[in-house]
Image 1 (cartoon, rainbow, N blue to C red):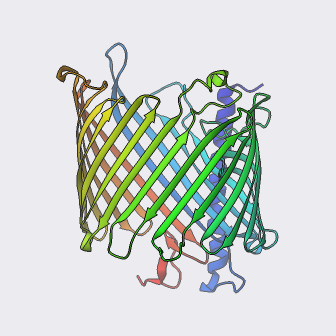
Image 2 (spheres, rainbow, N blue to C red; image 1 turned 90 degrees about the horizontal axis):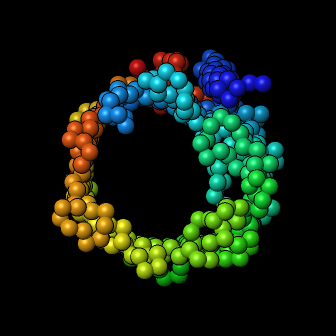
Image 3 (cartoon, helix red, strand yellow; image 1 turned 45 degrees about the vertical axis):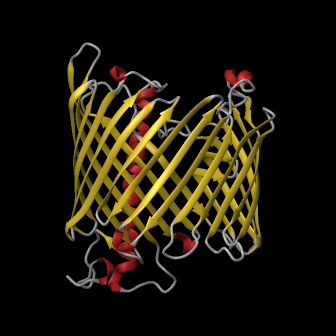
Length: 454
């Protein structure tokens, strides 16, 4: 039997092989589509691939006050192939390979597979996805290792079904098992009137052979109310049949009276503590206080990048309340603002600002700082107040299309460290080949992406 470490190594190797085959497939399809600089009338397959290599070096102090020089290496990949099998198949992959080069023993697994699924459209108005994918359907939101289906029998109606296993929270290359965490659900949506959408959803989740949740949800979206074209409203309620309680109720409204006028938004959320029926703590769900959140904001964009915004956020859990109020001035090349927090979550006074400017068409410089004074407890004495300062500088360089270089330096000053300086370096490579060409690619008839002449 393979040890867990050996299995992880095999999975990483298979993942690397799949990524390599994915990139090779893009090049192969591009070569076929670009032969003789002619395009297939039926539409050749298209694809894109993005690679990001990042090195993150920093120092850490262990429990014995020994300084450790750490170096993390991250190789992220993100890409897609579409138009396969005469437009009926598509492939989507996103993830990373990572490790800490300081550690001799691979005590942690930092590699991740975020998305990896095959999409098929065998007939019009029917779409199926198989593999790892994020599912956000009404009362359900999770990363699923399984099958997702959507059908539109009528332009005003849509039916979605999904089932499989919940992906591991670590998002490793190991797929979830239905016996451990099974998940199934459905959602039916309709559009009875223009600008009005209604939907109802239900789901069933298990964990370790026990029912974890049976949520039911109803939601509505309104985007075109007569005589008020600037109004947009969204609402949703969710009830859990297993725990016999309301899980969540929320509403969001946005109003813009007209062009050139401020945008006003308000949001309210009432939800219970996140505890499912398979948890030991589910027996205390009736005793747990509900969480109520409120948010209101006003944003005004003036001409040429000038503007202002203000925001209020309130949190209420039983008798414990916390409030944050802030505002900022919007400038053509950045913003500057202030926010304050009061209440049971502690006190905080924060000044912040950031700037960004393109010194050259292919060089962009960015900088920002935050000056923060905080206390963990409400009405804390001055001796319990602490200062936290963060400063960063960043340069984004694109020497040619499809090649991006990121250089960043960060400095943090807090009660535990006077100077915590970190450096970040990254390389981004992007290529879109096939019918739509962009980024890195071989020359064709003296052209580069977008048809520009060299």
